[in-house]
Length: 438
Image: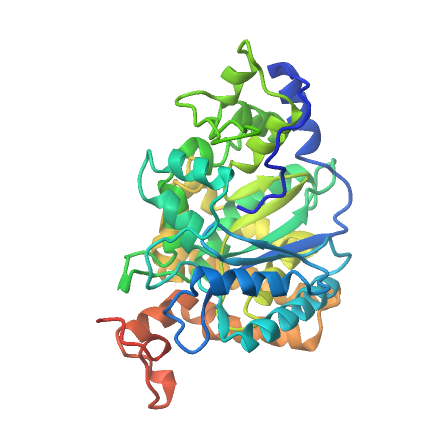
């Protein structure tokens, strides 16, 4: 959502549709040995002592002004609904990434705590309707465009939070770390990660019927914007065609509101009398929201924000191990290969496999079996990636609490909603101490 592309058009240098396809093929899959990784962690922002209450805009502006003065190593950005996002710099190792983001989060929380503001890792706001905090031409146009097809777009913009893991595209050559294998794996293992880390079963104080309400909203948006391209071919060619045939969300303007076209693909625009330029292409790429987005690296976008101060570390560690350790990557590939038949020819996230992961989490027997094998492979790989005992223990605790029992964090929230969390030791089991039945 907070992609770093200028809102201001630069000097135009028009590109043809053939040039666009060549540019996309060249910039979206940059191959080489997997050497770096990154993570983007999003958080819902709320009153510290009453987390069901949003922070008023004026206090939120002061808080973000204070945060921008911090010497952070991560990029700090604000989502349309006021959600906070930290995006790590590319890191040379798992522990470098974890260390940098953890230090930044400690600094951010300390500042917010002084202002009586808290942040929570939940995939979708459990209580409040979408409220837009940022009023900028990009988000005005985005809201106008997405409103044409339903309310899901506003919820995605203003009420959702995720953990996005960013991995190198992989080697040009085939094999466990080849870019073709990693692209295919991401679209099938992605369903397993979605199911294991689903953490958004509530909206406006009620269960939605989905373990990941956040992902259900992504799937309900227009397929040309939120779905993956076909997997039966070269990833570069498939993605370039997908980019060209995707609808144009908006056309930037130096002054005034941005234009929101109807029924115009980027290919149509490139063949028009007033074709786009390189900046328009860069911007168009940021308006596509598939579950795996190639941006030179692979951006895995299906994981809900996680509970606890350090809950984001587990999906980062598990995902990195299953992609960057050759032995674990091979195990993950063999494990999820049978799931491909269930996915069929329909692209993610709208095929049967992804819908089951979104709705059922690890109560789905096949997804539970796959998650069990994949988490075991990740646990074996983490020492080879230099993971500390603390990180390995966090993965082990998550595995025991959720994966081994066919559960995901969403199930905790549902138990709290129904007041049946037997692990509370007799404490108040209402969600954050507030009776959300009222």
